[in-house]
Length: 290
Ligand SMILES: Nc1nc2c(ncn2[C@@H]2O[C@H](COP(=O)(O)OP(=O)(O)OP(=O)(O)O)[C@@H](O)[C@H]2O)c(=O)[nH]1
Ligand SMILES: [Mg+2]
Image 1 (cartoon, rainbow, N blue to C red):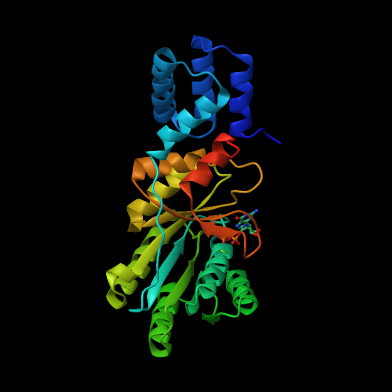
Image 2: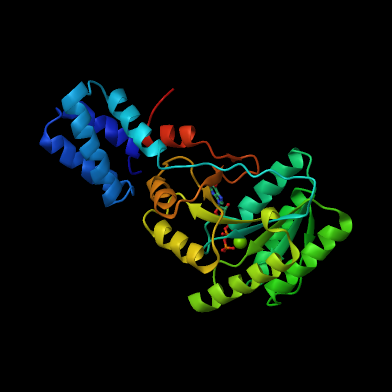
């Protein structure tokens, strides 16, 4: 297994003195860690300065300095469900990032908080997607609105909103297809869904979440730009941030698109889900043990 960014940081510090070679190597490592060239250069320059002025003496000094710098580039967001429902969360992301699983985890999470939840099976592109969501609905004891495979996802969401309003349910979690015949088709479909939701739900009760797979790396940045340009994203959700965590690209996405992160998934179980903590994320990324 590839060594985590944090353990490589430790190794780098262990064998080097703080000479030019060290900073170049650090810069390469930050780029490899998906923090992007801009951030990597910015960080290593700032560390150079700091090393000169105040002397960085230990690996923990180095880790904490990087942490401080990255902290400033990130924001978190904690969505709360008010009484004036229904609220709708549209869950977006490319194929296989963990949309459907995250919806099940969110359903459990909000139900545990005492909210009523409705699932909308608006990934109608694959029959199996509807079955998968239905299985999660059964397991988490959540109501689901679905239609036949290949039906219009906008219509599924329309139905779900009507139904949630009629039953007084507080939160609709809508699954979407990550795959389409082509990108233009996907974008057009998402824009259509967006329009339907906007016409039926108060703006403040409508949030669009983009799911980013922590193992994706650099590609996450183009994914985020694509979705953000297509319909505008409100917050990110990080998945698969377990074991060999590799989430450096998340810092870049937050920084370049100015987006907050709401949740993090750390496994396949319903409980492997939490509100995003910048502090914990950076500790894992940088190998900081507290
Ligand atoms: N380890 C781990 N696996 C996850 C996590 N979230 C999702 N998965 C797994 O990733 C795989 C894909 O998850 P799905 O929820 O089906 O992803 P999706 O985005 O809905 O996929 P499509 O509908 O095909 O676009 C499944 O095997 C999940 O169990 C996570 O946080 N950690
Ligand atoms: Mg899915």
